[in-house]
Image (spheres, rainbow, N blue to C red):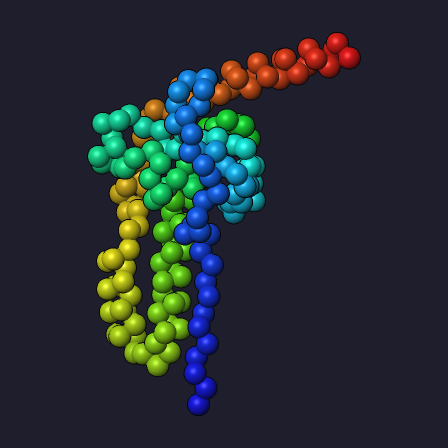
Length: 187
């Protein structure tokens, strides 16, 4: 009888994020700077946030921190970096950008649960469904996963309060494009 081989499941959501924190000189705000690109598989295709991009995390009023967590909470920092990138680059409309953020938070939970179940199945290859489900529930209780309630509230907070940041970034993009067109005209 052969012994079961260990299963290695690479969970992109639990890999360390390639970033450094620092205070931006321009406004004194703490930001996370990517030191390597981060790929995201989304419902709109592969999106790669490049190295050098800086993010202020999951921006929210300070009084929400007790309820949802710090802006740099690892529960959703990876997803917040994508959201900041989508807002800054405005590749999609605002609603789509917000939905992709929500999708990524939900995918993280789903993937993590599926990886946990696969790990347990590999560890208990002859376990009954009852034993496997019991172990799954036991381990799931110890995991820190975003609840659907928390995801929905973060999403609706964005929908209500994100318009200011969206408009600000739209103006900055328009100004950069105008400046770029002026430089081309001079050449």
